[in-house]
Amino acid sequence: MALIFEAEITPVLKTREMLKLAQLAEEVGVDRLGISDVIFYPDTYELQALCAFVTKRMRIGSLVTNPYTRHPAVIAAAASTLDEISDGRAFLGIGAGAGIGKLGVIRSPPAPTIREAVHIIRELLAGRVVNYQGNAYQLTGKDSRLEFPPQHTVPILIGTRSPRIAKLAGELADIIVIGARYVSDQQLTNYLRWISEGAAHARRDIDSIEVAPRLTVCASGDGKLARESVKLYAAYYLALLRPPDMLIEETKLQKIIDAVRRVKGWYFSPNVEYPKEIDSLVDEEIVDKFAVAGTPDECIEKIRNIITRYRFRSVSLNVAAVRREKIFDGMAETIKSIGDIIQGLKRA
Image (tube, rainbow, N blue to C red; front, side):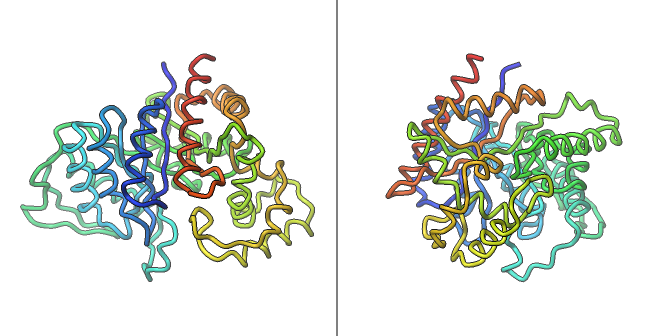
């Protein structure tokens, strides 16, 4: 079976630039394009629809939306609309959501909330009337159905960031993206075990579920520049996760944590301001734990080792921009390099 290549683009650009990147992703061989759902940034669903108009082959969807800022009925309607626009190329990615605390949203426990949301979404997409009384959602009435349900099957992808959601994904999802952020044998082994436990509980064949590791990728002919370009990203997740199996001197770790606290803005934003000491504190060993960065050949080798060792049939590549004057140029550079990575992995 051919390896499936997914790319995730975070909407940190103007809409027309996002569409150019979508077209470029399709040109270089990406099979599935995900648009991040991030508050205060361009809307994921509007971008998905526009990307569907300017592409012909790739599947397109959210990577991932959440069931807190958007009701499952609203999500189902959006997915059905995208299915029509894209002529059956839609997928629907859902997860626990991030950064929504700024909206004052009180989050119910993620795993049971996602379970309820997926049930409602699937029923609506199947064209059925939904009468549902749950802890997170209620739908009543004989008209609780989509007026225009999709004509094609819309696969549901669940992004995982915890043991409970990984197990839930094993029970429910068509596609699972392991969003561990930290590339280590322990993390990947744990996630695959949790997914298998969920699949076994639901009496599902684990081989029927597509599972992909989520890897942040920054690639360029200038490998050193690519690695430097994701140092802030690596610092952010090192400070957030503090992986117990990652050996790092305590004083150095604390300096990185303190520097991250002084960052102004989101680490992926083109307008982020951060202490330049992060560039010297974060070495290539740390970068290597949180990203796939370097030349296309270097990235090919690392990705090949991961997919071969764990027998993944797909890989999800979160596009990080090479540090250029314009972020569009940096993201386009990584996407072009992803084309080289895809070709290299296909030849393996």
